[in-house]
Amino acid sequence: MANIHDIARLSGYSTATVSRVLNRHPYVSASARAKIQAVIDQLDYVPSTMAQNLSAGKTRTIGVILPHTDHPYFQQLVTGILNAAMAGNYHAVILPSRYDQKLEEAYLEALRRHAFDGLIFTSHGLSLTTIAAYQKYGPIVVCEDPGRVKLAAAYAERTPAYRKAFEWMQAQGYTKIALLLSRSYAQSATSKLTINSYVDVFGQRPPHSLVVYQMRTFQDGYQAGAKLAPQHPDFILGNGDDIAAGVRQYFVDHHLPVPPLMGQENQLSSHLLNMSTIDHHVTAIGAAALKLALRAEVAQTVIQSDLILRD
Image 1 (cartoon, rainbow, N blue to C red):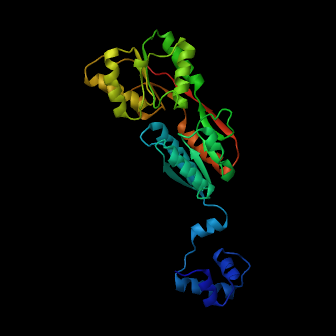
Image 2: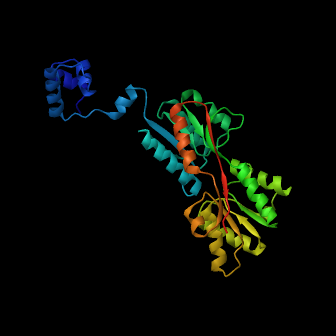
């Protein structure tokens, strides 16, 4: 494969002059430019974008650590990240993690080796303090409130909307409220916020039998319907509109009265079913996370969640 030294040798000009031609530098004579361009055409030479980026000290690539893709939250988050990356002429590379701490450590080590210009943790298995220790190698953004850990973050302020939702349920007289969550209280910041908000309003934790974890898809919601139906909940809060729609479908298919439902993420399914939802504006959070990664600044973008009540 031809390189810049071959072009210099065949054209009779220095590599510096060849480089100026390749980079369209104006200070090259017309005759020199013509001779060098003729050799470039003869060799069918194409500059290496990777080499150009490395010489500039940039890969123009942001790594996006993603635990899984089958939850609407992560789907919308990635959409926001990709849209912002394209607008900024950057590449976003999806790095699957499955919450595997060793995999996440490997991605952090790749940042240390400058394989990426920055990392976005959409969620994580590692502790925030472990993640923060790698910031000296490049910008890192998390998509949650980092609390006292000094990390760049883009996230939704969920607590006010959760409290409003539970206060509304309380005002309607609902007392057997089922919660569908992605991970356990100890593992998930969102599960912790949801249950803490429930406790703030009702003064006690929800019954263990009415809390179902590992909820990510419509099918997961459908299976949760089978678990919840014998307990006759009078209200169900799903951690996604499609998940709540799955619960509803179980009740419909088995000719059972459908309890009132509320989803999250303001997806198409909640519009079609005229179902209440909580909108965390996840696509906007993804775009904000990418922008923070490019700014390489330890700052935070906080977006307020909205409770949307429908009949």
